[in-house]
Image (tube, rainbow, N blue to C red; front, side, top):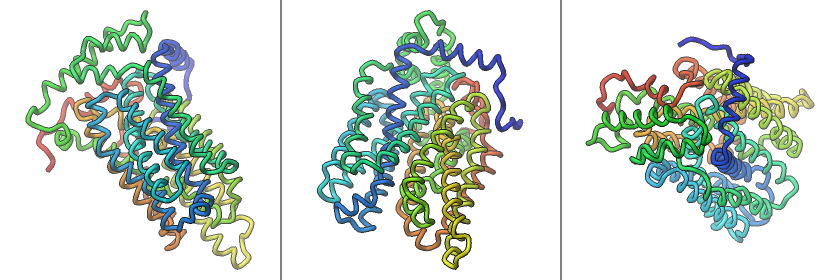
Length: 480
């Protein structure tokens, strides 16, 4: 595999090409679809970011113990697991747009359940419903954007949409410092309320239409997405022919889910699972849900910490969006993973210095290092590991196993997320330094994995990417 420069600079011709592509896809259906996905990602970020600034006030108002609040924080990931189990089948069965209806309704109900909770049970129910929605939409959003965007803007469109996750987290962090937790929950419902009217006007995925046998609608949908004057005949033909090719070569006696475990899918399945689970096992939810605990333990002002990390994560996300279709997915993944590794390592060192500060040494440097380490972690995450794992996963699976692959990847990351979220507080009590060294080790192993096995998908159509993986496979026998 040829190595690429980590941060290649765009040349004039590539910039002109990008501007041309942006002009071509600025149709009303595409803009509405992109807006709906971006609002959904923003809502996702609001859900994730809600618990960090509200921990103390919720515990005080509802008289919750640490165990009660740990359950509230982690039950989101229990819902994620359920959402992960059904996401692939649901989106394949009812389509991408109809699934968006379901996820938005669940989130709205969840927010109002939290806002009007008088006890822990309604609080947990609301968070659980949100988890189901996030478990579905974390797969659905990137897949839908990937399937409707043109190849040269697919990465940028997906990355820009997923940037909204970081923006949502940042906004909730900032609002949480000045808004009561019940009012904050009501504000969190606004993005989903904005999405609902858009769902009446956005098109279904052309690749899903081809999968379910509606070939005649594929070209019409592509024309609405690319513009009435665009020539979409080649793109429509490629989508339909590849879908038919997949159907002709699939095992009619094999269930869609079990087809995924054939030998030819081993590499792509492994890549998807590792990339998507890596941020969770590398401490993401520990940093996100319990940022206040990290800052408090190391002497950082929570307000300063939340605002600083919010700004730096958005900057990283914006930079990643600009570079994803220029430098490529793989290069940004490597830079992002290296930065998250350094962030974890610096956080571990800050806890060591914090222990030393009790003996009156390094007293001033500890909070500064802790703040910088968290900022480096979130900036690096926003640069690549936030949006790119799901973008890559949405690109590398053919339509016949995309639902099953999404379910498996989502299930693995949801379980990983639950484990880290629930046990993070206990790990900090065991060893603060050891916890972040463990996260750093995970990110280092992820860097090695990406460098060795993850291919570059920039600038290729989905059908070309699938041909790269599957047209010359080994035996089709299952691996079990």
